[in-house]
Amino acid sequence: MPRSKWFVAALKKGFPQRFLFSRFTKIPIIRQLVDHMLFEGDDILYLPKDDVIQVKKIIEQHGEMILPSQVVDHFIEESNYHWIMDWCICRSSTSCKDYPIDLGCLFLGEAAMSIDPRLGRQVSKEEAHSHVKKCRDAGLVHLIGRNKLDTFWLKVGPGEKLLTICNCCECCCLWRILPYISKKISNKVTKMPGVTVQVNPNLCIGCGTCAKKICFVKAIQIVSKKAVISDSCRGCGRCVEICPQNAISLSIDGLIKVSDTIERINSLVDVS
Image 1 (cartoon, rainbow, N blue to C red):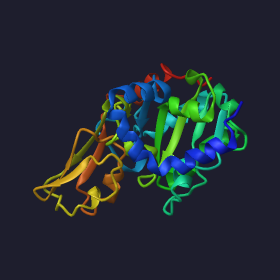
Image 2: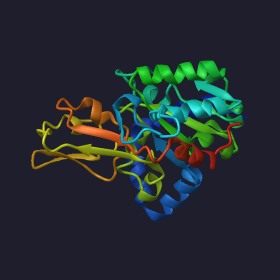
Image 3: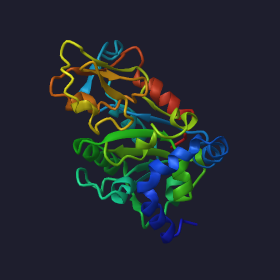
Image 4: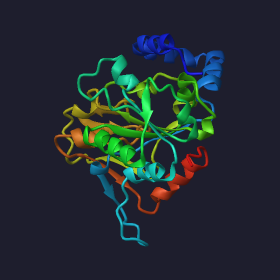
């Protein structure tokens, strides 16, 4: 039975308080409860934007460039079930002014068929591909993986039959809570394997553009008039495209193929 309308309304109402709530997860007993209820078994990856990456090595077998969007396209093709949410709960809850609110999550897998039809609709593969392209064109970043939180608030399951593909903005994304939430939980949201983000100190002038509400995990600081990126970086690539000096680069090691990421997700979720 779908979640009631009041539950979704209450969730949206409380969404702006997520930073306050997340801090409580550093209390051991609360962390254990929240982790068990909402994040147990999760593995979620941010995928860099295609247009900001540098490829260290081309895949020799095929002579192709590695594009993070290939991960999303693969699962759309493999899945027999495609379901688009008609609105983004994050952007809707915060009345986002910079990105489209109507570009919601894409859910794949059999469990998606139990989502309340008032929240969205089942679509074809072609419609799913068109949706994620619109999201990329709008400047949104894909997040993909198994997310127990979605099975909870959408009241669907089992978790191994639901793949979440979020389309995130830097201003409203739920995972802006990562700097505040328990490490045990935040470590379940990672960057794509093989991704490296670097600052060229010869080009960086320490203007601070990359550190001003661009990095959703606050991984960038200005130290001695140079940008420094910490290990908490999730490799989304927003800082790369915003840097006015082109001092930040994002690369993907060609030896770590897109298939590695696909296999990792396949081990957790069956979308067929």
